[in-house]
Length: 196
Image (cartoon, rainbow, N blue to C red; front, side, top):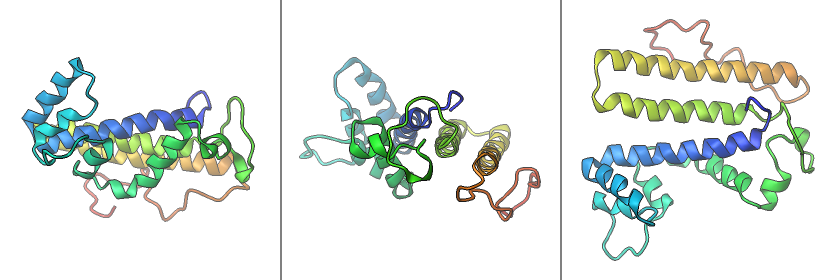
């Protein structure tokens, strides 16, 4: 994002999303799955470690990322379209070639080099995925301090969203506005507020 490559940043978010799903699956299904995951690092198996969860039938020949995603405990339905778009961006697809995040105004060109356009999506998604992973980590052995940290981390998502959306609106005034004053502002959020 810092270097102005929205599609590259989105590819990095894709990896963060996959780590979020796998972390959630391991957290949900316990210590045996965590051990199997670590042990499979010495093999060529990609997702066979997930069998340690015992939720997959023995007759299932292969376990896919989609299988893990569906059983991870995260509502992946809201992320399917974004994950699919990130896959298209990463691979040599027609959509990933011509429908780049850095294309302004929907023009079908192949952008080359840096752009300030399209950074908001990977920024927001990365903040959300990082917060999800960190929250899982903090809840393994939760304490009062970790609960407070989780609250601050979730507020951090709002900070990221507001800063990137407002910047987009300022830099690209002819584009559709991303920020509305009715959205939660981190500047007006008071710790302890229940209105979110």
